[in-house]
Image (cartoon, rainbow, N blue to C red; front, side, top):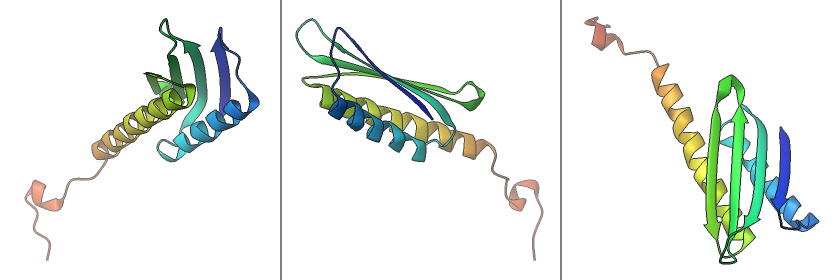
Length: 111
């Protein structure tokens, strides 16, 4: 998985990059087809931190989350929680479409 971390008018420390890398790699357990994760951090007008995470996967699956918090760690936590929820919801929708229907739905009795 390719991980890109950038800041717009913000310096990003190596500790923060390690924290973001840990959070981004945890997204793979919710949706295993992720290929590319882009994290952008910037400051809002009132001094708040705005984190935007774009996770792209195979077959044009794309998940985007943008969250605002008082500090950078809080905005990353909120954005990853949002992506976890969205990706697990998409995965369950996909699995629900491809499950076979029971024999009772076709009027077949087993036994």
